[in-house]
Amino acid sequence: MSVDPSAAQRRTEYETVRTELLQAVAEVNVPGGFRGDGKEKPSGDYCSIFLDGFVSTKSAPHSRENVAAALRAHGWKQIHAGGTDESLLTRGTWAVFVTRTSAPLLGANGKSLHELTIRADCKGNS
Image (cartoon, rainbow, N blue to C red; front, side, top):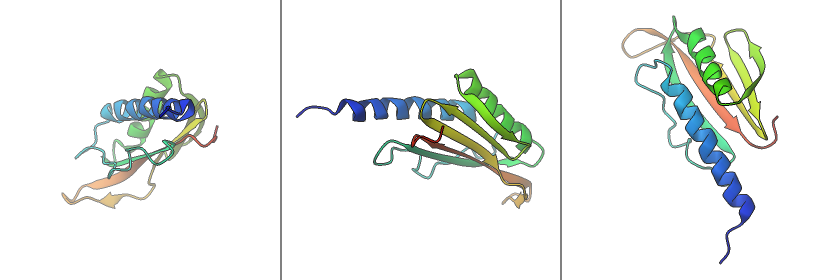
């Protein structure tokens, strides 16, 4: 049984993007850490990654900017930055959206939080 070279390439690209996203969020101070709810694992076509976490209201804008800066350091090109709410970065056929909610949420500890979401897709969004 032979291995499909395009499937192997998609898996390699997926693993590279996933590693870079996890490295980028590791640089962000997120109470309780990011959760992927298993969605950071490969989808059937290795073309989708979803991560989200909660950041304090004070650090929310900087957290999004820090994630975008970390991705730029890995060769991602920033296409759009919508104030403190959204960044779009691309590389090859991959696109990464880094967004945060604009309305604060109340955390279990009573602190005001924003949700920081990172979605990556390789379906030609660039």
